[in-house]
Image (tube, rainbow, N blue to C red; front, side, top):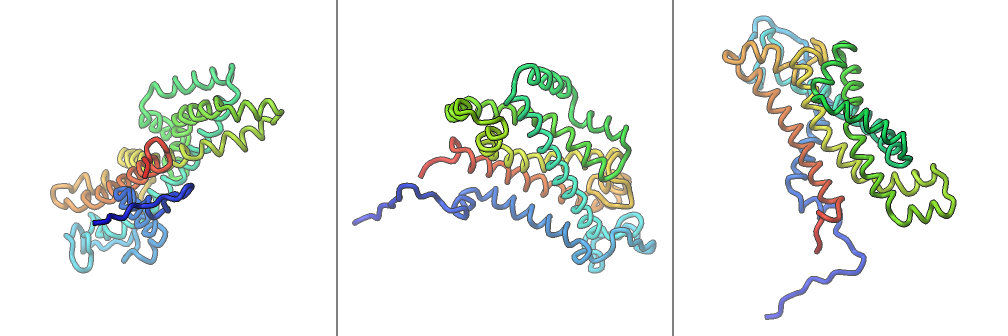
Length: 291
């Protein structure tokens, strides 16, 4: 019986959807992240109550028709606070990662491209910075700046910029060693042209991977800062703050106070990590595989 043989046209490549279906976990993570972003953007319209609307007669009520995820110790709707907490997590995740990548790209480009004493000085500063755990450094900076959403984003951006600058530097050194870069330099290309036309476009894939992977890490660090009292101050809800406040005090009596913020935090980190892993496989030719 004749069997059909797939024909591959030279120069053709799988579509984006075909590659996405080849990474089901990455697609699932993207769906989870998209759902959280939609909840964060439309919190005022999606949440059944305001995040600070209290009903003293409905304190610590279990899940019911009026409050799908129950209420906290002040009678506030847990579902509404989880939805509004998604906005804080997404703002911190996207803002911190964007600020961190901007700083890491600037430091990594300058260090890897120009080299010399600038490279040595920058890498020694990075070495000294990386001797300490990221959470400890973030706590120290937040103790100096004080709690607040803007300070959290600034702190996490600074932490990521120093840590990821070494990854960017390695990517720049790899691109800089290619022959076409040497040819462009021999033809008299300026530093701006070399960086804009040859270096930056070829490190774009590592930048995308760092962005997606770091979102999950930033959300976790923000939750830890809020849990320790250095994050977003109340009454504005954050998932880490919900875990440390009433969720910690009333965990045995009302376990839903800690359960649902923990589930939301896990979904956000899972989605970001799965998307990052899928993008790494799709953008790296060594991991993409062949037809």
